[in-house]
Length: 360
Image 1 (cartoon, rainbow, N blue to C red):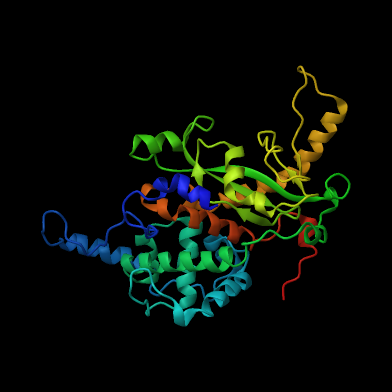
Image 2 (cartoon, rainbow, N blue to C red):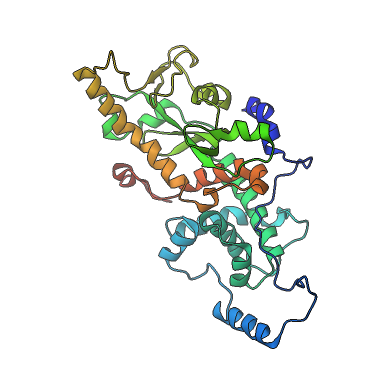
């Protein structure tokens, strides 16, 4: 993984500032004077008052919201799961260092977490969030940046730093894997994240994907047979091959002899995996023909590979990833990895797994 950062570090550092970029908006505060310097007319004042009233008399707050609203605004399944996330943050409340250098005291911690998750899930403009919570856009920026990076540490770095062993995975193996892929350790795939075209020509060449016809970053995702995301690489330019990403991502260090990997036919990685690791990909056509056994093998792989495709779909349901603008380039890794961690907190997409889960 460190190799990745060295090779493509210029893509994440548009300037000389080594700090992560802020999850910001292009909105401006309403109280800034216009270019003419003239005072607002009484009609403009009236419009502003009407606009403020349209957001309601009280502050928006997560407390008391029904499960369906929590699910819509945050991507988490219900209030119970949201409160568990807030509980993790509360453990470190006294040691939180805010991004802008000043502590936010006028907004409850539960709502600060709520604001950050709203930004990730719905990508609301900062001005909209500021109106909902009766605060400035500067406060929104401070809260969102602080909570996003804190949640990344708590939910991704602390919980997704290792890949569980094959033995542990077999304890939660869905029945569909028992016959043909019982030794499956991971199902891997690369997915593209749309990014604004870099201004520098050399960077633009790297991020442009001829296959997708757009500028993108690529990320390697690996899920367990039960559908849980257990590995998310750092981002790579869209032009980099799947094989190169596997080689540089650090995922190979988690594999041991006897492991089985399910992948798409583009993952020609058998020559780079550790000895004794099996890579199972759909068979290629032999002189334009495919045998009956190859048809069965392709169907089995496709049936089991669909779990990683579902995971990719859920990751992209977080609208902050619809398009990574240039000012978010330095935070792109954090955003994608946090979205992966949040997907793991959602209801399982495998019914067989969902029926066996208990929450303490």
